[in-house]
Length: 289
Image (cartoon, helix red, strand yellow):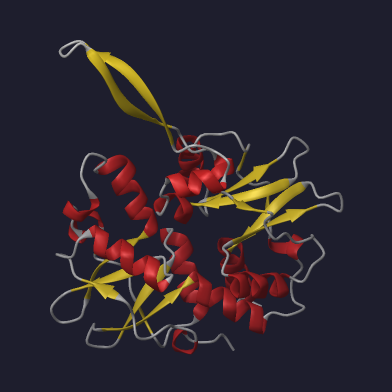
């Protein structure tokens, strides 16, 4: 029997209001370690949803000239979010998420009030518990993966992440072996500080001096360096082999709090990738048998 949403949804839910600032929403996500927030109205009904992807786009594309404190949640959120009731099956939740390319569904009661949230991670956890021995990694993995090299710029990585179905970019070496992975979340919450640059053996900025024509004297200014993929990637990513149990791979993703596992050959060369999307598709397929 297919488990219901009520068995795996999270409750209570972290929420924000439309009039809250994007800075407040971002800080709440960081503090609670979550990737989305439900936006609620006066009756605690879901009126929107905001994710780390929305924050990344707002800061880098939509409002690059505005400070984050001046941007309101209602300017960035996705309005009228798709919802689900707690009595529906997880396969239905998985189907809706994949169809609409979303990562979470607010769960409502009969009156339309928010009572929980079901996410891709929750469904991956259900898969890890209920599908042991059913699939191998090779049965569900996506062939190939979105890749880049350590020296690629963050702007290039962002563009790749927006094109990838799961927002994941695998960083590979010259032999095609995965040495790092970058998710959209890493880009949304990136702060290229002198401290981070120092840990990577680089300078966040260098000081230059130029002649000020108006005052006929030297003036110091900063030239900021552009962070590269190598600066922000999660190094030495966990990997799986094609013959591994897919449910155990799902359990590893939940345990380590990660959204993707590169699939490698016996020689360590990248062959594909397993993300939450592939696991959701397996839940849909498995429910039909």
